[in-house]
Image (cartoon, rainbow, N blue to C red; front, side, top):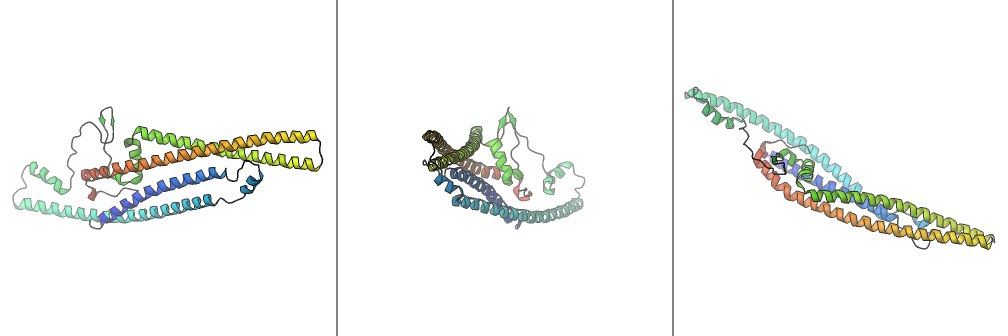
Length: 310
């Protein structure tokens, strides 16, 4: 038992670290996605296509840096997950040893208890004394009666079972339980709405970026056509027609660049709101989880229960 508790504490801390690592990975993914939207604006100018064309082949160092951070977070997560699996195996072996020792103790106690009762002429006593002794022999007492209501939620006045110790020791299970049954419906709905709006805004920004590229290329082709026409001494009417088309395409290009910038601001605002919702979820979960875990340990006797699968 002395070796088991520190290992359990280590597993619990490592499980919490994995939850935090998953959140960091999600934030890093959002940062990479945001940067990719921003790169659609890189090199864009109101002048025309030449500067933008040079930017097409450039390496986005910031996106590469963010991608490197994301890769590092994923590697660290995998290392922690592997460490937790090994720790779980070790804890399982310790628990098996404790269980075997407890079983041996129970068997010896039962034999001693029977011999003492026989030696003192107590074998013929009624069952009252035997029932009083059964908790000492490792038999579980009957479950206490429960009242209506719920520690997590109440549906139509019917009690919902409190979370088990195994659920609360499993980081993923406890977080899923909190989000589905404890966290307020308003907060859940707001977070889902923000995620949907962000996904839609990112998709629109990608489409807008592709349209900006097409408009920029069209402007570049018209400029080349105008230059070739002037070099060949073409007619004034044709020159006027090319210039008119060029003015139209430039105006369209500027409009699309403005639309893309607006989408970029929208994406950044939604990401900031979603990050705030994530911090709210983390704080609310931490405030609920610690006392819920303490209650479950008191209720179920945490020292003798197996470590849940993380």
